[in-house]
Amino acid sequence: MRGRLRFDALELTGRTRRHVVELAHPRGVVHRALVEPLCRMHAAARRAGIEIALASTYRDFETQARIWNEKWTGRRKLVDRGGRTLDANALAPAARVAAILAWSAAPGASRHHWGTDFDVFDRAAVPADYRLGLVPAEYRGGGPFAPLSDWLNENMARFGFYRPYHTDRGGVAPEPWHLSHAPSAREASRRLRLATLRAAIVMGEIEGKAALLKALPGIYARYVRSVDAPPSSRR
Image (cartoon, rainbow, N blue to C red; front, side, top):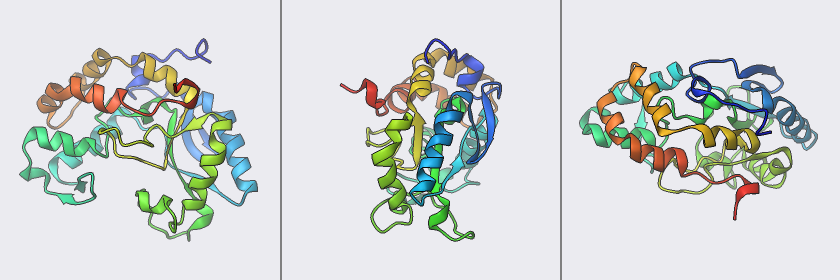
């Protein structure tokens, strides 16, 4: 796999779509290396009565920047790691950066840029008008997606997938809905350097850019590098 994957700076930071393709079932945009294993996992889950749907797949730099800017300015809801709503405009720049990063990656730093990562839910478990929250309670006992979570625990590894945000490492809060394709994401992670991320941010239209760049070395260590390792590389 490593020999065939050669992520470049544009692919790593979401400034191109040349590495991704659009799927119809399940519907989403993913790295071309995911097509076969994701479709096989989708079919296996369906046989178990679970309809894997993709809530978020590939996300480009501009979309990630828009999310960041809306949270920075208070136009989009900002919550802390405990789920409490924050007033973005009442926070100092460094505190605002930290608050956004609990749930949203910095532009250029999202694993969704790679096309290797996506968010899942079980469409068969909820009515068509269900308002998806993507909160941990939905995936725990009693939540509508707890059976999906249990099925993934037992089956996703055989298709090459795992949860990079399973453990709270003090960076991104745990996200049981976020899956990563281990072989391709491992290569993207290996290639993403701090200098690559900095260059993308410098060129972007980003609110709070000065504060973000000042904090970037720590962000790279805490939010980009500090994730759960793919199963095959765990010690």
